[in-house]
Length: 406
Image 1 (tube, rainbow, N blue to C red):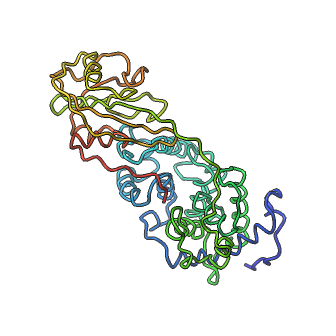
Image 2 (cartoon, rainbow, N blue to C red):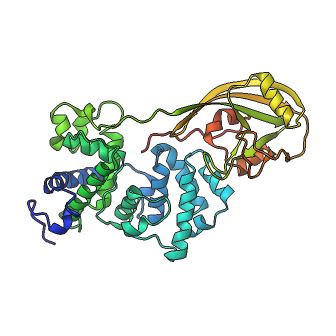
Image 3 (cartoon, one colour):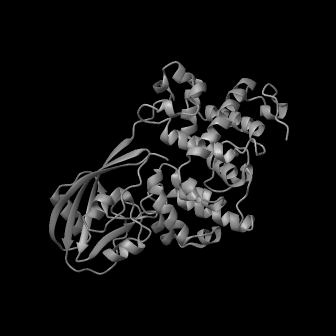
C-alpha cells in the first residue's frame, strides 16, 4: 500500500473540518516513534498476552480510576469465574458484586453486565468491532470503544484518556483546558485522522498497529510522562518533538480547570456483633454504593451513649461498646470522615423487622440482618469504604484498589 504524502490530507479525513491539517501533521510525527518504543518496552500485563475483545473490555473497565497493580489480581479472578460474555450476562448479582469487591465504582460492573446482555441479545454473543456500535453498549464511551476497536480489532481509532491528554499537551505545549469535552474530542479526531493515514495497514516496513500506539500512550503516561512529579524526559521517545521540554515548561501542562470541592460528610459506623455474627444492611438500589452491603451507619459523629441508644432503638440488648479507629474514604464527589464503634449484643433473630434503613431513612431492600463472618467473606460484597471496620473483625479484607489509573 502506497504511503500517503506527509503534505496531503484527504478531504474525508478532515472530519467535517473540525480538525486542522497542521494538527493532523503534528500527530502523525509521533505515531511511529511511540509505536516502536512500545514494541520494545511494553509492560507485561495479563490482558496483553492475546488479542481477545472480551479480555480487552474487562481490563479497560477495571482500569478506570484504578491502579494497574491492583487490577491484575482482580482481572485474573474475574476471568476464571466468568470466562465469556455469556457467563457475565448470566451471573447472579451478589456473586458479581463479590467478584468486584474492593475495586470500587460498582456501577462499572453493573453496566458491564447490562452490556453483556445486549451483546448476547443483539450481537449473537460477539463483541462488535466498530466504534459506533460499541458505543451503543451500556457503560462504553469514547475511550473504551476506541481501546477495544484498536487493541482487539486493529481499527485506526484513538483512545483518549488522561494519559493521552497529558502527553499531547506537553508535546504541543498546548495550554487548552483538558477538562473541556470539546478539546478532548478535538484531540481524538486529530489522532484518529493521523492514524488512518499512518497506521491503516501494517507492513514489514511499518509493523506498528493502532493498538500499539494507544497502548504506547498508556505506558508512556504511566512510566515516563508522569502525572505526578518530574517526567523522565531523557527516556522519552517523543522528546525531540516535545515543545514543553524544549521550552523547559513540562510541569506547566496539562492545564485543568479547578474541580468543585468535595462535600464532607461525618458518619458513625456501627459494627454490631452477636458472637461471630455481624449486623449488615443492604443499601438502596439507587444512589451511592447502590445495592451493596454495609455496616449500619448514621450521619454525624455520635458519642458512645448516642451509639448505644441507636442500637437499643433496634431492640438489641447492648452488652458493651468499644471505640474503633477513625477512618476516611474519598468518593468522586464526597468524602466520608468516619468514627466507628464495635457493639456487642445479646442473641437475637437473624433478621430484624425495623421497616426502615437507619442509615438514611430510606427503605432498605433487604433490611437489617445478621450474617456469619465467614459468610460475609464468601457471599456479601462490602465496599472498601468500610475496610478499617472490616479489619476490626479480622475479616482480611482486600486493601482499596486506589484511585490513580494505570
